[in-house]
Structures are given as C-alpha cells and as structure tokens.
Length: 466
Ligand SMILES: Cc1cc2nc3c(=O)[nH]c(=O)nc-3n(C[C@H](O)[C@H](O)[C@H](O)COP(=O)(O)OP(=O)(O)OC[C@H]3O[C@@H](n4cnc5c(N)ncnc54)[C@H](O)[C@@H]3O)c2cc1C
Ligand code: SF4
Ligand code: SF4
Ligand code: SF4
Image 1 (tube, helix red, strand yellow):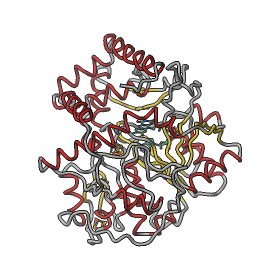
Image 2: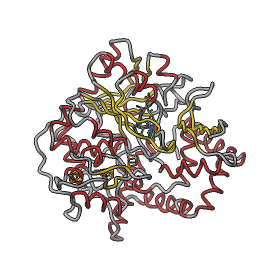
Image 3: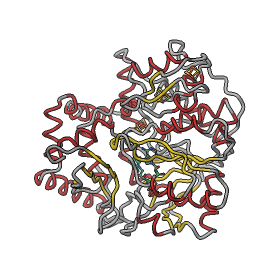
Image 4: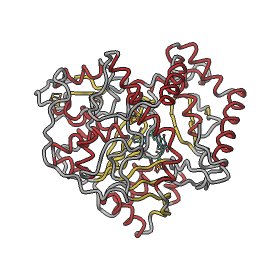
C-alpha cells in the first residue's frame, strides 16, 4: 500500500494562468491553433454561458459571447498540468511525479456478474457494472459516459446515462476522438452526485476545475479512469472506413471492441457500411490499434505523460498479463478487466459492488498490471519527457509541465529516434493507405502473428516485451 489516499481537498489552488498569452475564449482558440488541444471537451462543458460548441473535428469553436471569466483556460489540461499540485491535493505530500503507474492502494482482476454487461463489454464490463450498481442503488443520479455520435460514427459524444439501457449503449472503448466532457454543460444546475468515466487528459481538466471549485467535487465524486496509450483521431477511422468500404457506401456504425464467438481478447474493430455489409479486423484490439495508430497523426497525444489515469479514483484496463508460459494469465472468453484502486472512495465503490454480488473480483499485486502495461508506461513517462524537452529546445509549443523529468537514458533516446522514423508514414496519405492495406493483408497477418509469438516466447523466458 503505497499511499493512503485522502479525499480531495478543495482549498482554492493558488494557480496563476498557465501562460498569460492564453486567456478567455481567445485563449482556448489559441490552444487549438497551437495544436495543444487533445479534445477533452472540458472548456465546452465548464463554460458558464455556453460560449463554445464542437466543430466537425471535435475541437471547441466559439458560438456565443464570452464573459471573460477564464474558467475554460484555467481548466484546460491541453495547456498544461501540474502533476505535483494535483497529486499532493489527492494523495498528500508523499506524491511526487514520476512513478510509472501513479499511487495505488490495491489491484484486482474483476468482471461484471451481470452476463449482459460482461458480454457486451470491452474487457470484463467493470466500468458499466460499477455504474449500473451505483445507479440502481441510488448512490448516483447518472453516469457521464461516451456513445457513438449518431451524426458521425467515427466520433464519440458524451451523455449522462440515467438508465441501464443508456449504460449498455455506452459500452466498449471508443478509440477515437470523443470530447465527452462537453456534456458537463447540461448538469451545471444539478447537484448530482454523478460518476464519470474518462481518459487521463480529461480527468486532468476536471481535477483542475475541482481544485478551485468545490461544487464540481461534490457534483462528480467518483471518477473512473481508463488506461490510455493514444486515442486515434477520428480522421483515422474515417480514412480506414473510406479504404475498406465497398464502392458507393459510407460508414454507418463503428464498434471498436465488438465480440465474436471467440470472446476476449478477440473483441475488435467492426465497421458497418451503409449497404449493411460489415468489415471486421482479423486481429484482437491491441494489434488492430497498433496497425491504425502507426498510420495516424497522433497530434497532442504524443505529448501526454499519463498512461494509467493517475488522478482517477479507480483505473481500468485490459488484463494484458502473461503467465510464466507466455499465455494470457486471466483469459476467459467472457473477459476480465484489470483494476487499480487509488483512493478510499474508489475502494469503497469496488468493495460495496462486490458485497452486493454485482462484481466478481480477485486481488492481485498491482505489479502484475504494471508488467502488462510497462512498454506503454515507459513511452509515456520517459520517451514523451524526452520528446517534450526536444520540442522545448526547438521552441515549439509544448504543454506547461512544471515537474522535473528523469534524466534521459541512451536507450530511451535510441528508441525515440526509431519511433520518429516510423512516424514519417502518417505525413503522406498514399503511404498511409498502403500501410493500412498491408497491415490487414495476409503478409501483415503473418508479420503480426510472428511478432505475437515472439512476445509469448519472451514472456515465457521472463524477458520484458519489445
Ligand atoms: C482511447 C482509449 C485507449 C485505451 N488504451 C488502453 C491501453 O493502452 N491499455 C489498456 O489496457 N486499456 C486501454 N483502454 C481501456 C480498455 O480499452 C477498456 O476501456 C477497459 O478495459 C474498460 O473495459 P470494461 O469492459 O470494464 O468497460 P465497459 O463496460 O465496456 O465500458 C467502457 C466504458 O468506457 C467508456 N468509454 C469508451 N470510450 C471512451 C473514450 N474514448 N473516452 C472516455 N470514455 C470512454 C464508455 O462510455 C463506457 O462507459 C483504452 C480505452 C480507450 C477509450
Ligand atoms: S465565458 Fe468564461 S469559460 Fe466561457 S469562454 Fe469566456 S472565459 Fe471561457
Ligand atoms: S484540451 Fe480540452 S479544455 Fe483545452 S482547449 Fe482542448 S477541449 Fe478545450
Ligand atoms: S494519450 Fe493522453 S492526450 Fe491522448 S487521449 Fe489518451 S490521455 Fe488523452
């Protein structure tokens, strides 16, 4: 037990604006212009007078007058995050930026007891099961979740789910632009309490607001975070759909983690086109994601330092954990989720859901979860830090991160150079198309299968994944 997490204190934070160049509505538009916006939607949702709408690409756009309160800029995590300030407020003096996983007081692998929820889920259905339990037992008025945007199946949008049906509709991961904090603008007048599921960057924005405005802490006392490597820009889904669609059709629906009869970990990207035909990725979610992420312009995600949603109450992930023979350790076709419990209120929610017979959970050492996510955590904490320092030196716009980074190791630098060599692909559209088709071709399948087998062998030999 590393930290005994305290309930977030709500003493106003003495936080000067991250940068005086950014203020009010124009400041947010400049964040977008400077390519610092990761499309969390917080500025849209927190603005007291609905100055912002969402543009076609998921960015904030001005639709009304601004009263110059600067709430949007103060909350914007695209502009910067002071990890130590948020960390100390949540976890006390013991918090210091740099730990791969962030503070954790317990871990488990778990699954929804409700079969409908478990079978419809990305992994074990823990997120939805916890929300369903909280809703049904009257502990929350609603859960802020993400659904497919009916006007654009390549994008996600926020809803406040107040029924089980709405929760079921929100299930599975949307690995795409989903600025769902925009929906906060519908609950300004409601006391709540509400629960929220969000990516690390979205949690940063809400935590920034909660530190200076206790009403938002009271309104949203429970935050479930998803571990996040990258979120693919919606343009990637659109481009993939355009290449894979039968001639004359368009994308009608996207399910990023649809199950087939093999179950977890084969629940994967499925696109339905306007003629009713369906394309399904031949790979599981991680490999599918790897193919598409290689050809995606990942933008602001490449400057993100938080893999494990370290400011959530509970962080949830896939149980990418291998046993000593290199096989998945927690593999049941119905799926498990990996769970990192960070705060006392997070622990209480999990314990009560287990006691109520809604969640099945097995305690595991947090290190098991870390072992499965190590590569991604190293990228976020070490390689991204190097990347940001290089950008600073080149006088490019970078988020304000006032923490001290670890010294950059040689092997981190070498890996980063190779990574940027591969990142040239997304700059050229014809090459993107070629790589996408190659990735899903028989040759691609052969290469990816070979890589997976190599990983299994390395895991069986006790070596870290490459
Ligand atoms: C962009 C993204 C990247 C991820 N990267 C990793 C990773 O690298 N490693 C890993 O182990 N796990 C990752 N995850 C988490 C993983 O995919 C599952 O979401 C997690 O295991 C929870 O599954 P579940 O069965 O408990 O949830 P379910 O019961 O299926 O519920 C999923 C919940 O997630 C919400 N959600 C879906 N998409 C988004 C979104 N874009 N933003 C905010 N909330 C959303 C839904 O509204 C729903 O409430 C990622 C998820 C996302 C969305
Ligand atoms: S009214 Fe306040 S929150 Fe809204 S855009 Fe203007 S400064 Fe931002
Ligand atoms: S990062 Fe979030 S808060 Fe900042 S400009 Fe983008 S959508 Fe708005
Ligand atoms: S990688 Fe970071 S910035 Fe990108 S979606 Fe995930 S949490 Fe947000």
